[in-house]
Length: 453
Ligand SMILES: Cc1cc2nc3c(=O)[nH]c(=O)nc-3n(C[C@H](O)[C@H](O)[C@H](O)COP(=O)(O)OP(=O)(O)OC[C@H]3O[C@@H](n4cnc5c(N)ncnc54)[C@H](O)[C@@H]3O)c2cc1C
Image (cartoon, rainbow, N blue to C red; front, side, top):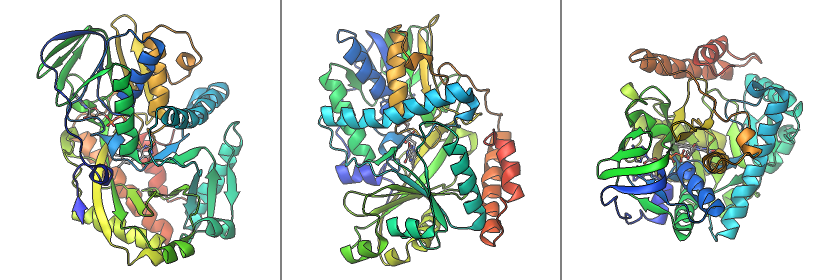
């Protein structure tokens, strides 16, 4: 079994040869820090809107090195942190924008010739305990009370006819989600951005962002606008240590499953698959007929340290493998080909933001928690509008310009996050013993973490 190597997705594609680092000081109109989806989408739309703009992207390793090249490949319409925080009218606008975003990514991929194994089969989340089913039913009622959600509540038979998850008591499905190959998407996007005339400097680490400049280990880029798109790595920038907490998520992938196994499992339309556990799982059927299966690993490292190459602890690999086999006993014989992990960015209020301070020219986007594959596109389009001063509907969405308070100092941060995930794990185990009530431990953890707002 491979472990790390950035991710299975990159191993499958082959790690890219590095682009030229920043050769020294230079000037630009817009400097973007981070070549993940956020930075690349911002660069893409800026150049589409104003082709003569000088846009430079600065990346510490290579384009797609971060979460964008490692994720579960759910291109979904989820509003990070929930719609309700924006009120009825704002929440509905935010949701409609997210639905459009899923289609916008699919549209641009087709227009730019990016073959990222994209397939729009919707998103299915299942419940495997009575408490999970109660949460699923409540989530359906809540979702259904909003416009633009299109959710369907499925009983156990309909769920099983779709994808045979062992012990599934029901499912919640919606159509606004596509399965993607994350690394193919980010690699294709980087190439598309370069075709538009953007320069991506790799192996160039930004240490400090200031009004009018991004300071790197290889020189300084002076620019009218500097956009921070560093997500789970943000804590490494001067002055940003407590902005977004880097949270780990880990994945495993099976070898391709034989047709006879797929005949029993179903999963013909490749809907993305998740569950209603507190420490939830997420999975996709890959284009080459594997199951890629993710969940939380060691959630957080002391002092906001982040990994370097996606290496994952044996304990996490064992836990994910055993859960995968519980879900799909028919796939129990399938070897696990690879394991990896990545970091996502978690704001103190668990809600993503995008913004630009016109006084300083400094912009940012991120804090997507586990749902950034689509949201990064909305962020990129919005950043482009903000930089160019366009008064669009996107620039007026309610998530624009939000600021959350900072995370606690260590060791409180470490203790809180470790404690929280231990509590969620215990709550899941309690709920497996039966009962329809969500474990009180999970309710307390939600309040403490700020997730329950
Ligand atoms: C294992 C895993 C599974 C996930 N699954 C899903 C999913 O299925 N669906 C979903 O919607 N979301 C998922 N996510 C979240 C999603 O992948 C992210 O929200 C999204 O990729 C964020 O993109 P980004 O460009 O903002 O950040 P990243 O992709 O992390 O890019 C940030 C980039 O900035 C660079 N960088 C950082 N600091 C510096 C610096 N100082 N100088 C220069 N460069 C720097 C990094 O090297 C990196 O390339 C998952 C995340 C993980 C880790």
